[in-house]
Image (cartoon, rainbow, N blue to C red; front, side):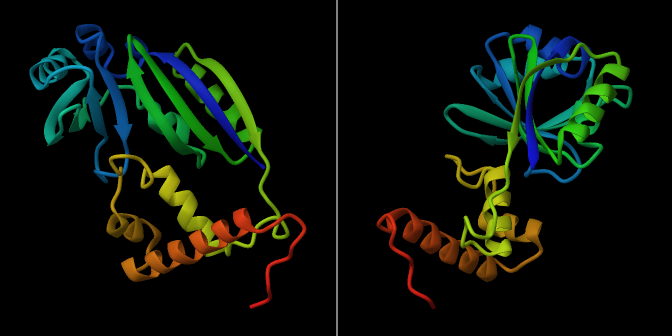
Amino acid sequence: MSTIAEFRLPAAETTLGTALEYAPDATFELESSVSKTRPSLWVSGVDRETATAAFDADPSVDGYELLVETQSRLLFDVSFVDETVRLRDELLADGGSLLEMWGTDGWWQVRVRFRNRDALCDAYDRLEASGLSVDLRRVTDVTSVTDSESRLTPEQQEALEAALEHGYFEIPRGISMEELADELGISHQALSERFRRAYETLVGDELQPAGEQPPLE
């Protein structure tokens, strides 16, 4: 059983507190799949000039680079000064998986999946030990399905979970199939085949009449 926790933390105590104050209409959303070495952030709600001015005004920001500009969002690679509190590191030190992280109106909202409640408690203690005001807003225990409840193979399950975590199903996509295949250490063709078979299984299960068993293969 894994545990999903939702946190709310004041940005002034972590990162980009000044940027969020400078641009109160902006939303900063972490995109973890773009850069391997430093965080990448989607910025929405403001134009490019306001976003870059917010980064320039923030003492926690060491540097930034604009990667993508769309009609509604901007994607930046951002590096922070050494003494900045690494909120993501504190949350994920014990093997947690970051599901969502976005900041707006002076606050960071974070969703993390932990192995169990003990790992969640450890992360909470680390945040408090760092001097952060932590607001744990919601905790949900997720019961893993058993083999009898799902006909997906472990490899298919892993591929779908990774795709969901990295934003493959979002619009626009947060990661390409080639990048996701690299994350999983498999070829693009192998990942495509896992998706195809997983989709076939899920659709078949969904459309199967109640009480009717699928044919043996």
